[in-house]
Amino acid sequence: MIHVREALRADVPAITAILNALIDTTTTIYRNEPFPLADRQEWFDAQGAAGRPVLVGVDDGEVVGFASYGPFRDNERLPGFRFTVEHTVHVSEAAWGTGVGRRLMDELIVRAAAGGVHVMLGAVDSANKGSIRFHERLGFTEQGRLREIGWKHDRWLDMVFMVRRLDG
Ligand SMILES: CC(C)(COP(=O)(O)OP(=O)(O)OC[C@H]1O[C@@H](n2cnc3c(N)ncnc32)[C@H](O)[C@@H]1OP(=O)(O)O)[C@@H](O)C(=O)NCCC(=O)NCCS
Image (cartoon, rainbow, N blue to C red; front, side, top):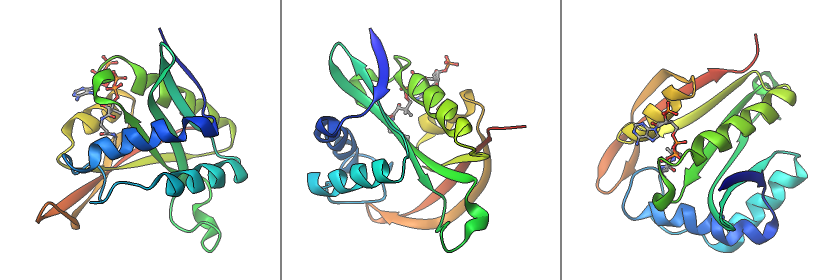
């Protein structure tokens, strides 16, 4: 039985493992080296300090996915962006298609909307058709495609902005 709860610092190794499993074999994350655990612990602490949610999906006691969001661009320097966030959602391959991604995003959206977020967006690699479809099923629409903005696995990558307005 899958449930969603707020992440604890003790969940950070599982979150790091979920991310690192995607790095070698996919272009989901524009990065070649695994994340060091300390890097993700620093991120988790910063999310907590900023009051931003980090959620995990748990199946039978095991963390199988997580979701969170951060600022879109530098909204301290450019406060006009403060009602927009960029989210992240990742699920372990063994749990794909089990509804955990939707459960995580539903809860993340509730919290974002309650916190006054107007627009939520995900930056998705264009080769990641499953994620584009997933976001469409959750009411996100493609609102921009940046050609050859990334480089990984010896090729240029296009990035798609999947966007959803949360209020009004
Ligand atoms: C994309 C991802 C988060 C989706 O999570 P998930 O738990 O597998 O998705 P769910 O089971 O909750 O599916 C929710 C909906 O999206 C659809 N969907 C999910 N993955 C899909 C895929 N690969 N192809 C087509 N549709 C898909 C489901 O059919 C479902 O639709 P429905 O509810 O209308 O029936 C997950 O597959 C994942 O982590 N993939 C690798 C990392 C990644 O791409 N992260 C996003 C980076 S932007």
